[in-house]
Length: 446
Image (cartoon, rainbow, N blue to C red):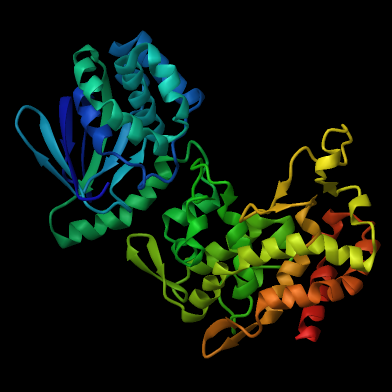
């Protein structure tokens, strides 16, 4: 919520002004909730709200016992930059900084209430209209499209919603304390549904450099926080970032906690190491409360390599089967490998796919579907094509050309590791020696 003002009318309200944060709490009218939904987003909320059992239960409660809803629901927590009292128990809330101001907790309540209002306003066509609303981000276009009907239906809504608003004390010191506290409050209020390490890190600004560096056509397809629905998990990108981060000279927090095999067998460890790095004063600095901004030149340049690494991951995946076949014909016979062949798609043979598989990042169609364990050591070996000069990580060879020229040659050596692992991709991906062999091979071919 940025550069936005919302007027809320409370049916009952009390104020607390003596503490480091100021707070009002009470119950607001349905009309006020409509105004809040008009303006709301969930950018300040660590979790995305999605349709499910929780939102269904909220709607059922509003339908069956609207007079008890404010007793049944924990309501919504808002953080506002300003909260000014008006007449008739009304308060004008100002939201200016979308990173820390807005809905901190209660996103599912807000979504459930919005769906209840839309169902009543739209009528019998509601199930068809609302079929496309799976999470909060799908709601605003539908809400705006039926806003006139909502206005017409408004008199029928009698429910009250518990609302709590926190806002700063007057002056610069009050604002500083507010910024310091908001992220901790949001985390604590959301601890009834455990936040993933990635969600916490995203909220703290740890992934801003990844968001800036990554190919922009992928940005909206990444799940940056819990439930936001991206097909690409941010932990996959964090794991891949360590290929370049490992080239940064010197020790820094988190670096010694990372092991190459974690890219495959334990991405959570990659995330923990990354977060440990990013929360260090050596690597980043606080900007707003606990939100941090990357300042380390070398780390910043390493993360910038992510503009290429997802593309190179897909390239290795698509080139690997043919390179394998040059080393030892019969990749398709490996038990964990499945094949797309249109002529055999309807033979009910489990070895053949009913449709082409696609690469992880850019969704390029390819003939073979196989586990990442086979290629992860080769992806790690991309680090041998990087150099660290003048405090920056950069490519010392064109990685695309290198892969296309050398992958088949590498497989003549690397194939032996696959054999020794019994053609088991899990063993290949979890064996440190495979990573060392792939890296040494790439290094020798430069």
